Amino acid sequence: MKLYITEGSPYARIARVVIIEKGFDSRVEIITAKTRAAGSPYYQINPSGRVPYLIRDDGVALEESQLICAYLDQLDGQPLFNLPTGEPGWEARRLEALARSLADGLAVWSRENARPEGERSPTTIKHEAARGVRMADVWEKEINHPWMHGTLNMAQITLACALGMAARNPDLHWRPGHPTLSTWYDRIAARPSLAATAPPPLR
Ligand SMILES: N[C@@H](CCC(=O)N[C@@H](CS)C(=O)NCC(=O)O)C(=O)O
Image 1: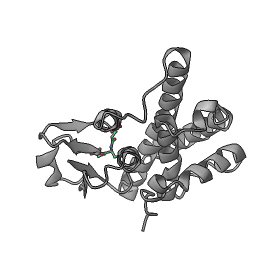
Image 2 (image 1 turned 120 degrees about the vertical axis):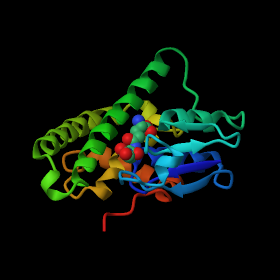
Image 3 (image 1 turned 180 degrees about the vertical axis):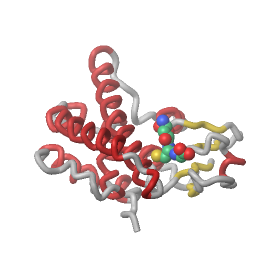
């Protein structure tokens, strides 16, 4: 299989973490794509131009990190990330969605930062920065939820990849005022799958 990524994409990182956690490193070739560039050869491979993008062994290709992770997880018949039934399952989905909401906002902010200086929207950046603060406040409380502790799950991976975006955004400071979240993050960030996929700081 082939997984197209960019080093800074939190969504691609989620898929990469799952690949490592599943022990699929040798089954999936990781390829860095050139995204957001006119005429990129990557558009011949994935017309949407987005990452992550998984090309399965049978040639079928999948977009969307949640779909890619769900596919990879069931591949060996020993899923790691199945959800509990009933109310605990809804809690798990709620927390994953909340983590994804944080990632989505921070991704918009990063995208804005990546534009040429004269094309950046201060309004969008202000809006996403304020959303980021509100979401970090929410997570400072939610991080005590039992689903965010113990056996690794998709909500934990998604939140860790969202918070890890601070490495690529010099204006994102989610730690101050959020000591419980900071302690949680430091623990999960040390996990080999997360350490191996940490986004390199912007040059
Ligand atoms: N909902 C998608 C989001 C994927 C996404 O937005 N990827 C960004 C990188 S963080 C991308 O490929 N952007 C390239 C572009 O917009 O052309 C997922 O979960 O996979």
